[in-house]
Length: 355
Ligand code: R7I
Ligand code: MG
Ligand code: MG
Ligand code: MG
Image 1 (cartoon, rainbow, N blue to C red):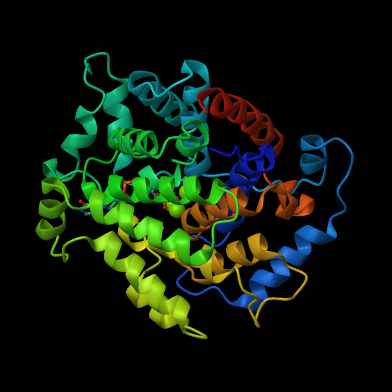
Image 2: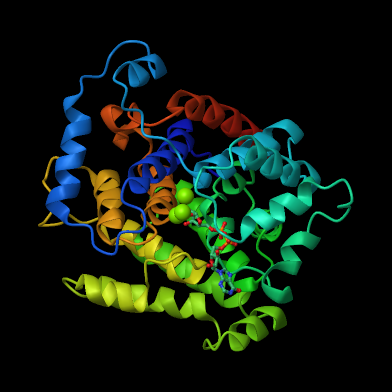
């Protein structure tokens, strides 16, 4: 198996951080006007990058804070690095302790109950609090997917990617519409790390994996219980394929078919579509922006859950294009960007050991 370069690991974590920090500025708006977004980005680019990294960011007094998406992604990565493998007890503890330390990062409304239960000394099954959410149906939010990139950055084997993406998500999201979104996002990052995959092959592979992932009894019954058709993620991936065959797709169609919401089903496919469509130039986005920048701009322009859709698409695009496409002025505008680079190096080493 060919070994992906360090640049893809750094690109992945940097792209994820950028998506979260930039997206958070616009989170929850139903409409984001492109001129306003472009002028906001111009403001970041105007501030000259200074010597000294993080100090420079804070010297400008403009460091954009990251949200729960990055806080939880960092816990995933820190747990994997500390234990050198997936450890559910350690990861759950890190999620809960991180929430306790900084509860105001913008966490989902319901997931905080999971953290509170995990913090109790009476909790001896770390998956139980997640199973109790929403009257025992489990959450279908995108929280499992938004934080999952560390898994495919540690496990080169695709079966491991699926297995540990699912387990890491199940610590908070017991509904298959939640954890299957995490599996899909992890598979997208895994494929993006591989050298020279075409858009068509990338999508075909995702579809064939998800048709298998979604065919088990729990996935079928969870989807039916919520009134969805069978294999809902796979169906949206096929819709993406249709969209990519058109010369242009109105934003309204993207929002109605794929969505911009906090459910994994209404955001993970949207992130994947954003990445794939932004491989091509966009007449509305200035030419000097590269494909990774276009991806993040496009995600934010959709409105809604902008931090989370942009962080997921940013992770995929960053893994695909590598750190060459991460603009220093954008990166240096984000909180804790230097730590991201250090974590990427350590993940890379662990991945190479496992090859
Ligand atoms: O999924 P989760 O971690 O939230 C992540 C989102 C991202 O946008 C972050 O940036 C942050 O803003 O929050 O947290 P959950 O609380 O598990 O799920 C998020 C929301 O999805 C819940 O608060 C509910 O509104 C909704 N939701 C459900 N609603 C009804 N029935 C999730 N599952 C259900 C459900 O089964
Ligand atoms: Mg967030
Ligand atoms: Mg929020
Ligand atoms: Mg969000």
